[in-house]
Amino acid sequence: MSGKCRYSHPGTWGHECGKPGKWAQSRASETTANGRYWCVRCDECRSYTGPDNTGFSRSGWLPYDPQQHRNSWLQNRWPNPPAVIESAA
Image (cartoon, rainbow, N blue to C red; front, side):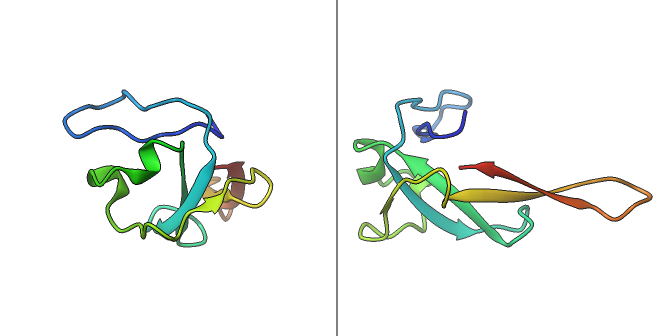
C-alpha cells in the first residue's frame, strides 16, 4: 500500500484513507531500523489534527517521493544477524 494516504480517523481501525499520497513527514520510531518512520498523507488528511497526525508540524510536510521517502525495517534471520529491508513509505 505504498504511496497511499494512511490516515485513520479517531475511533476507526483498518479504515485508512487510501487516496494517493502527495505529502510525507517523518517521526521518531522504535520499530524501524533507522529510528524514523515516514508517513504519507493526501491533501485533505495532512490538515487533520487527529491522533494519527500527532507530533507533525503543519509546515513540515514535504512533497512525497517514493525513492526518497523510504522506511527501513529489520528482518529477523536468527541465528544470523538481522537484515535491513527498505520499502517506499
